[in-house]
Every structure is written in C-alpha cells, then in structure tokens.
Image 1: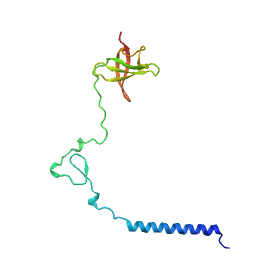
Image 2: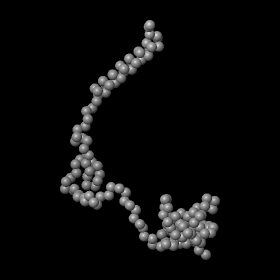
Image 3: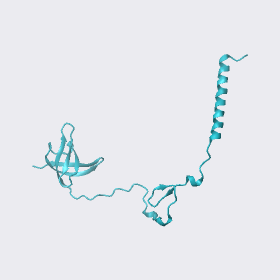
Image 4: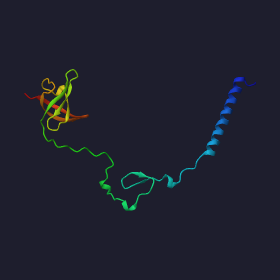
Length: 148
C-alpha cells in the first residue's frame, strides 16, 4: 500500500522542522559566549553595605558582632501611653457614611473616628474627649464624648 498525499506532506513538514531545529542549534553553538570568569562574577560589599564590583579597602573595614545583627523585622516595642484621655476638635464628619476625623489639641494629629465610637451625634468644630487605639491604618479614636 502506498502513502497518501497527506502523509507525505506531514512527513516533509517534520523533516523540515528537524532541519531548522538542527540549524538553530548549530548557530547557537557557534555564537555562544563562554561563561564569565570567577573574577567577573564576584561582587563585594563596601564599608557602607553597598554592593560593588571592586574589593573593599581593608583599612575602612568594620567589625560587627554576630549577636548585634538582626536579620528579621524588629519586633514593635510597646509605646508608653502619655495621656489616656485626650481632647480634640472634629475637623470633618460625614453623617451618611458614619466616619470622620478629629484633630488632637496637643499633638495636632489627625485621628480617625467611627460613628460606633460616639456617645452622641457630632458636627464639625465640636470638642470631644476621647481615647486613642492603634488600628490597622493608624490611630483611631474610641470612647468619644462631646464636651459641653
């Protein structure tokens, strides 16, 4: 039995692809650059901790104790609470969305306030007593009360 026209065409395509692949491989071998030498691959750290291609000056070398090095993120230390109750003025409050900001009278810091932390409704320029807790995005006012 003889081969059909389709089989002959497929066989010609496969042979052509093999030849092209072999030619590309030969071309890559001919144009391949040899790997870098050890000296070309070396990287050094200078006295300031920066990576450079030149070896550091031994006179500027610093010695470090292994116990003093911290490789991980340092743990957050507990902060001292200066004042438990603070006072401030409402600079912005959106009744529809239920949040706003208070400007602390001592630190002039802007502190987020949510409607759930208020004992009564507030408006802009109202004075408040409140406590501060750290939230995921910064300081939040809690237990806020309007000053008469």
